Image 1 (cartoon, rainbow, N blue to C red):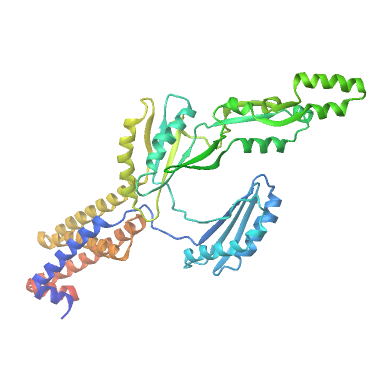
Image 2 (image 1 turned 90 degrees about the vertical axis):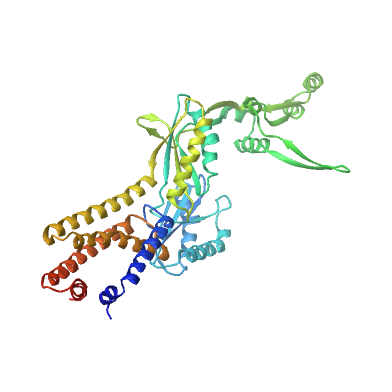
Length: 455
């Protein structure tokens, strides 16, 4: 007994199977993850190492070449390329397709750990990163205001960025644009030479002076107190009063004395003025409260703004994360100053919804056109209406298979589904026309359905 014969002889079983497919398809549709692109694991890993103030030749010789030699022994590597520029080494390793990139990244980190002792001490830890060409931000926000960009940036970080990063599914929020405060210390080379102090001494003194340091504990019968030395600068004026060096006036004077009379005169002066002199940072140069040099510029509709790019966590669903962000954004806007405005300028979830709606509209239009064409030529309403039922049932059946196979709804899968459903409708039209031909020859409906479906 073939499938057409079974369907005709067991109509109740056939209807129950169709109802099961419809119910399962609806449940799968509600649980299917929806993305813009399919999750593709591109077989490439990058090793990034920062080495500040190093020339490209030094970066290549001290960092890039040792890393290339180390990772060359990792299995399944296809090619290695590298870029050495001022302060940064970038080594890219391309693997064969089908390689498990988690194990490849683990093997690469193990090889790099073996040569870490050969790298310069001042360089940062090498970072192994995976490459994903479809790793785009799900949302981009534009923050504008009537105030200055420095205050707007501080407001954005405190009231918007920190709140958005707490949302479930949000990995990070990257800010671009705005102005950041910078305390600039300009040293006068002439004053530095006159005091016989090196620039390294000034840098070390600033680093040691601007720290909070633990100073032990005090224990009592019931309590234990932690002691900290609060040494961080609170005001710009505190930086000016930093003591760079303490001079001993007596030693300096003795080097310049040429007679006993001068020695007696200098001794009397030391008793009156003291033997020590403090050299402050203000004596060496100027301290300015200024703006950091711009590394990024952000504008929206020709107006300077601050952009926030929101990245989702791996494995989270774009639509759900985007809806959570929009809901939280509504609450954040109530706490913002009146002159600060937040607008969504890019929303990946809208592209996903448009793609899904496009496939749905195409399926409805295709089914309707097929029905009208068959109705015109066959002049049989019920026979033509059968073709319309094929489209939704087929799509729901595809949703079930996609859910159990772990395939997401994205542009690629929806495009393939549209082509498959179109081919199925073409085949259905051919079968319906064959059944109609046998009906015209005088066969009964059940017999014509079986014969027309098999021939």
